[in-house]
Length: 269
Image 1 (cartoon, rainbow, N blue to C red):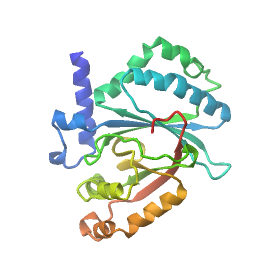
Image 2 (spheres, rainbow, N blue to C red):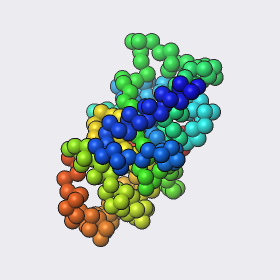
Image 3 (cartoon, rainbow, N blue to C red):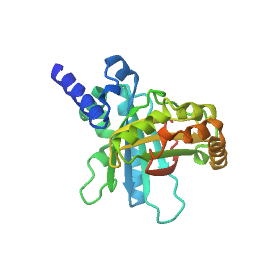
Image 4 (cartoon, helix red, strand yellow):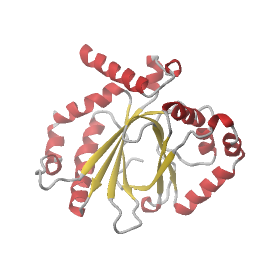
């Protein structure tokens, strides 16, 4: 057990240090690290309705019940809101972890769960020529200091109408990346989103992913019209105008991606 704990600690330190050119600003105390959750975002890509159905059944009836037995109380599952017939179908699964140790231990614990193996058999034992997905992308994050834990949005609109807006902001270098993270925390972007009731689910520093250096965050809105009004209020706010006028925050985003999602009926978020 001591060996496993040491491994978890080494992975945590390595991930934190590799993306931070300013090690003196890294939070290193155990107390601070444990207060900030870690997130895994798994993105499933599909090419058929059968794949989607198999994976949905696995997530709802096998995976989510199994991870909840391990103390992961809230799991988000979201669908890609398509607007063209040829748009690739995706499902997004969002998992919060209290520590890197919990993240590293999950797969081993699932492999020992007989109920999970039985409920997820069609997915777990799928043949090589009839897979339940085309591929899975995994992104590992740590929560921002200004919002250290994931939050369930305060919405009562029908799930099919909700807009869960997932954003990724890439930066030209690690230094500019940490500058953008600072803009959210010390600069007050997180507070501004709160004031305007963007119902954020999470803000995350990407520790491992395909588009680094980047951060990701998710806000939620009752519907698209509400989303548009919220962003209009954000852009017109005195706080945002003051932030964008600061020379120290110039050029810290080189590329932005926006995905519109909606929660499944079995999603906790």
